Image 1 (cartoon, rainbow, N blue to C red):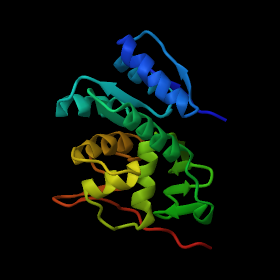
Image 2 (image 1 turned 45 degrees about the vertical axis):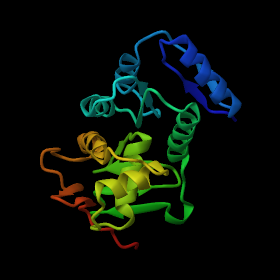
Image 3 (image 1 turned 180 degrees about the vertical axis):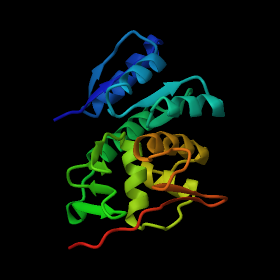
Image 4 (image 1 turned 135 degrees about the vertical axis):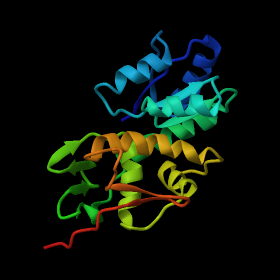
Length: 209
């Protein structure tokens, strides 16, 4: 069954060009006439549905702002329509990725439980809704607890394709992730920062009974 892609684009030619590329890949389209940033902010109020922002705003601060709104990826104009489709597909794959072999793993004496088959995260007994990128970051770190991942390495592992530059955009995703899973985001113990190196999972994996 085809995924549904919502396109928010005020330039008709670009909108129709994207429509043709996405439809060629078997993805259904919905095209609202509202600002993209407004849509992103509103959607993140109630949902972790995948979001890719396409915009002419290309400064580092613009990218950081877009990611802090909750976008999973950020593409600036001019762009390759094929690249946009591939990035969207990569986000959708992350959201649907499963790993039955590692169905449910516990960390920090049960403080965090990740179930990759069901694609669920539970922290201190409460379910946590994560975006595809946040989920990707957390599960990547959890593969080898305590291992330090550089920003460049982590963002490429999470995105599933080569990503040129802008490694520090991962900081925005980490910031959003910490708001959801840490007791105190200012003093993180689950996703730790290693100065000058990157990030690591601060919880040890629990032994299976």
